Length: 243
Image (cartoon, rainbow, N blue to C red):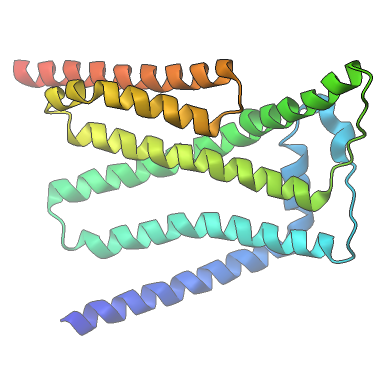
C-alpha cells in the first residue's frame, strides 16, 4: 500500500518536472514579448522614455532571458504543485474537509491572479516612481544624477518587489485562514488583538520605505482588514444562532 503511494508521488513529481521544463521552454521562446510586457506594462504611460536600458556585458541580455524564463516558470509551477498536493490528499479527506480545502485552493488562485494584476498595474509603477523621486529632489538641490537603468538590475528590482509583495500575500492568506479556524471563538481574537496590532506595525516597518506615512497607512489598512473580518465573523455567528 505504501509502495503505491510512493509510486504516485514519484510520478507526480516527474510530471511536474516535465511541466516545469515545458514552461521554461515556452517562456524562452516568447522571451522578447515577455520582457517587453514586463517593461511596458509595469510603467506609467508617461514613463515610456524609460525603455532605454544600459548593458555592460555581452551575455547580460541572454542571462536576463534565462532568469526571466526561470522566474515565470517557478511561479506557475507552485500553483501546479499545490493542485497536485490537493489531488493527492483528497482521497483521504472527509467530504467537508475536501470542500474546505477546495474552496481555499480556488480562493488562493483567484487572489494570486488579482495580486499579479495589482502588482503590474499599481504597486510596481508606484515603487519605480517613488525611488525616481529622489533623483528629481537632488536635481532641484543643484546636485544632479543621471540615471541609466541596466536591464539586469531592472529585472532584479522587479523580482525583489514581487517577492516582497508575495510575502505579504502569503501572510495575508495565512492570516485569513487563522481567522477562519478561530471564527467560532471570538475570545481568542479579542485576547490577541494587541499582539496582532503590534505585529502589524512591525511588519509595516519592515516592508515599507522609511517613511512614517507609508508605515501608518500600511498598518491602518491591515488593522481595518482585521476588524472587518472580526465583524464579519460576529455577524456570521449570530446568523448561525438564529438558524
